[in-house]
Image (cartoon, rainbow, N blue to C red; front, side, top):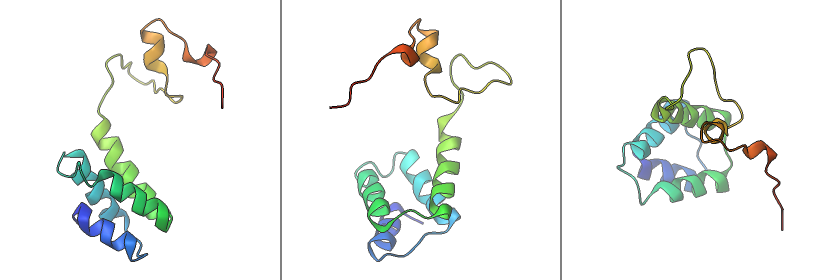
Length: 99
């Protein structure tokens, strides 16, 4: 499924299967859909995401992510700021101000 077709499906309020959502995200990660990327995500959000669409998209993103530079066998960074510790910074101690 092309990313353009996926956008059309969302505009028509039609849900995608896991495989269709995964294929659309694969096209995005391959660099073939740079101008359509934000339109796909906006159309998905406006329609409302389904479990299948989220699952298919997550499978594609996981495949595209690849290993990190400081990967240690058996360990997973579950909080998203492990890179900062490798640079000697701790984002967990940083205070964020909401305006």
